[in-house]
Length: 79
Image (cartoon, rainbow, N blue to C red; front, top):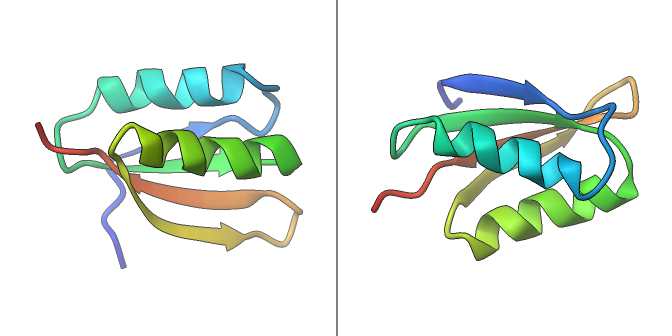
Protein backbone atom coordinates (compact mmCIF):
# COMPACT_ATOMS: atom_id res chain seq x y z
CA UNK A 1 0.00 0.00 0.00
CA UNK A 2 1.24 3.47 -0.83
CA UNK A 3 1.04 6.43 1.54
CA UNK A 4 -0.97 9.09 -0.27
CA UNK A 5 0.43 12.60 0.11
CA UNK A 6 -2.42 14.49 -1.59
CA UNK A 7 -5.63 13.93 -3.54
CA UNK A 8 -7.13 15.70 -6.54
CA UNK A 9 -10.69 14.97 -7.70
CA UNK A 10 -11.08 15.55 -11.44
CA UNK A 11 -14.26 13.49 -11.88
CA UNK A 12 -16.21 16.58 -13.00
CA UNK A 13 -13.48 18.00 -15.25
CA UNK A 14 -13.13 17.53 -19.02
CA UNK A 15 -9.97 17.28 -21.11
CA UNK A 16 -7.62 19.08 -21.21
CA UNK A 17 -8.39 20.38 -17.70
CA UNK A 18 -8.15 16.87 -16.27
CA UNK A 19 -4.39 16.74 -16.76
CA UNK A 20 -3.88 20.46 -16.16
CA UNK A 21 -5.33 20.11 -12.65
CA UNK A 22 -3.31 16.92 -12.07
CA UNK A 23 -0.10 18.58 -13.28
CA UNK A 24 -0.61 21.66 -11.09
CA UNK A 25 -1.13 19.45 -8.06
CA UNK A 26 1.99 17.40 -8.86
CA UNK A 27 4.02 20.61 -9.18
CA UNK A 28 3.00 21.61 -5.65
CA UNK A 29 4.30 18.34 -4.16
CA UNK A 30 7.80 17.25 -3.14
CA UNK A 31 9.70 14.76 -5.26
CA UNK A 32 8.66 11.20 -4.43
CA UNK A 33 5.22 12.25 -3.14
CA UNK A 34 2.22 10.09 -4.02
CA UNK A 35 -0.79 11.80 -5.59
CA UNK A 36 -4.19 10.14 -5.61
CA UNK A 37 -6.22 11.21 -8.66
CA UNK A 38 -9.95 10.47 -8.79
CA UNK A 39 -11.10 10.45 -12.40
CA UNK A 40 -14.06 9.46 -14.55
CA UNK A 41 -14.59 8.94 -18.27
CA UNK A 42 -12.71 7.30 -21.13
CA UNK A 43 -10.58 10.29 -22.16
CA UNK A 44 -9.18 11.07 -18.69
CA UNK A 45 -8.66 7.36 -18.03
CA UNK A 46 -6.47 7.13 -21.13
CA UNK A 47 -4.85 10.58 -21.16
CA UNK A 48 -3.97 11.33 -17.53
CA UNK A 49 -1.80 8.23 -16.90
CA UNK A 50 -0.19 8.58 -20.34
CA UNK A 51 0.65 12.27 -19.85
CA UNK A 52 2.00 11.60 -16.37
CA UNK A 53 4.31 8.84 -17.72
CA UNK A 54 5.46 11.11 -20.54
CA UNK A 55 6.53 13.69 -17.94
CA UNK A 56 8.49 11.05 -16.04
CA UNK A 57 6.08 10.35 -13.19
CA UNK A 58 5.45 6.77 -12.08
CA UNK A 59 1.99 5.21 -12.32
CA UNK A 60 1.69 3.10 -9.16
CA UNK A 61 -1.90 1.89 -9.52
CA UNK A 62 -5.09 2.36 -11.48
CA UNK A 63 -8.17 0.89 -9.84
CA UNK A 64 -11.84 0.88 -10.82
CA UNK A 65 -14.24 2.08 -8.12
CA UNK A 66 -17.84 0.89 -7.58
CA UNK A 67 -19.31 4.24 -8.69
CA UNK A 68 -17.76 3.98 -12.18
CA UNK A 69 -14.86 6.30 -11.44
CA UNK A 70 -11.21 5.28 -11.14
CA UNK A 71 -8.45 5.87 -8.60
CA UNK A 72 -5.02 6.58 -10.02
CA UNK A 73 -1.88 6.74 -7.88
CA UNK A 74 1.10 8.68 -9.22
CA UNK A 75 4.57 9.07 -7.69
CA UNK A 76 6.09 12.42 -8.53
CA UNK A 77 9.39 12.07 -10.32
CA UNK A 78 12.58 13.14 -8.59
CA UNK A 79 14.85 15.64 -10.26
